[in-house]
Length: 236
Image 1 (cartoon, rainbow, N blue to C red):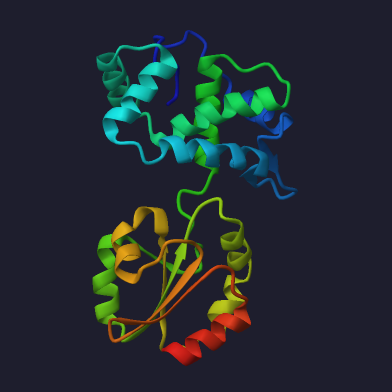
Image 2 (cartoon, one colour):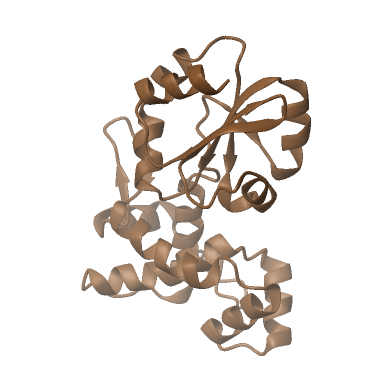
C-alpha cells in the first residue's frame, strides 16, 4: 500500500526517511543504539486490536473494509488492491497509525503519507514469529518433517505475544540443552490451523514433543530453558 488508493500517482512521492523520522518522533517506531528498528510496544498493542478485527476477515469482507476506509466502490477497491498489492498487514498498519497519532495528540498524517508509513511499519515488523535459530515449518511441511525425524520438538509461536518473546530471548540456551538427535522446528501458529487441530494447540507459545509421529507431550505458556530441557528428556 504505497499510496492512497483514491489518488493517482503523486507528483512528489513522500520522503521515506522523513516519514521514518516522524514515526520515531511519535513513538511508533524505536531505533536502538546499533541502528536497528523496531515497532514500538504502544503501536503493537493497537495493531493487535485491529488484527483481531481485520486479520481473519473473509476476502470479500476485507475488500469491503478497504472500500469503506477509502470511500471507494467495491469494484474500485478490488482493482486498487490488485494494482497496488494492498496486504492485510499494511491495511491494519494504516488503520493503527491513525489511532496511534490520535492517542499521542499528534496531527494524523494525510492518507498518502500514512500509507507510506504503513509500508515502513510492515517492513520493520517481523514477517514471522519463528526465531532465526530454528527451522521454520509451513503447515504443509509438518508431515514430511515428522516422518523424517523419529524424535522431534515443534515450537508454536505467535507475533506480538509477550510470553513468546520471553521464551525466544532464551532460545539459544534452550536449544543447546536438547539432545543432538532431537530435531527442532518452529511454526507460526496463526498460519498453521492444520497443525493446531492435529495436536490440539490453541495458544502460544506451545511446545509439542513428538516421538514416532505421535505427540508425547504438549505444553503451553512460557517455560524456562531448564523446564523445557526436562520436558524433552521425559517426552522424547
